[in-house]
Image (tube, rainbow, N blue to C red; front, top):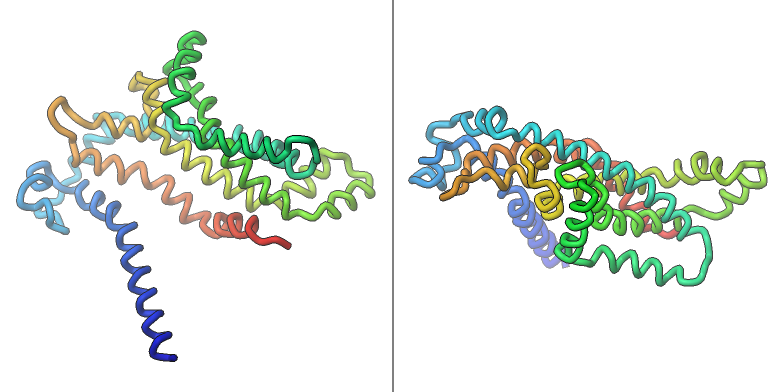
Length: 277
């Protein structure tokens, strides 16, 4: 039995190591490639782990000539704004769905989930026509259609968390004279904070990585976000892989810092909603 259990653990450990390697290796290789010259990327040094002649040229070009910092600024504005308004709307929507009984409640949840399943290509055309008539192209109004991507997910996550909060707490607060708004921001929101925080992080990352809507609504380079800015690091005949790698390494840092810094809160928020008390 011990031998079989040991073999099982060894097999599991090997599987985890291989899985982690597969997850980390692409970013590791991109980071290495960002220090290589074009000749080394496509020449004999393409598979060399340590660059033969490391250079910061790709980073200098991306930072000072290709406007990647402007793209980072745009992504921060768009992702932060989207996160704030989605969390506000999703929080009140999820609370209402969780606490109030009304006809069609399950149908409403199903419709919200169905919206999140729509391919972006379906809504891109109508949204583009709307923005064209409203003269909103090439602006930060792009945060509005982002709700079709992030809001359904946020509502579903928060409904799960609100369902875990006992109704007795609200009833006790109401007996003590608290108003509905006081119950929300003094009782419910503090208890749901892990779930709200986790949802905010997931929403921010989803908005940060959005590509199709942004490139369609904001063709002007001044309003390009990070994914769109990286996609334009090319010439008529080739993709500038050194610059793409450098830009990818730069723009991954903000989301990586957020995930690493708040990993405990993220894990806590995800697991709290999955445990029924």
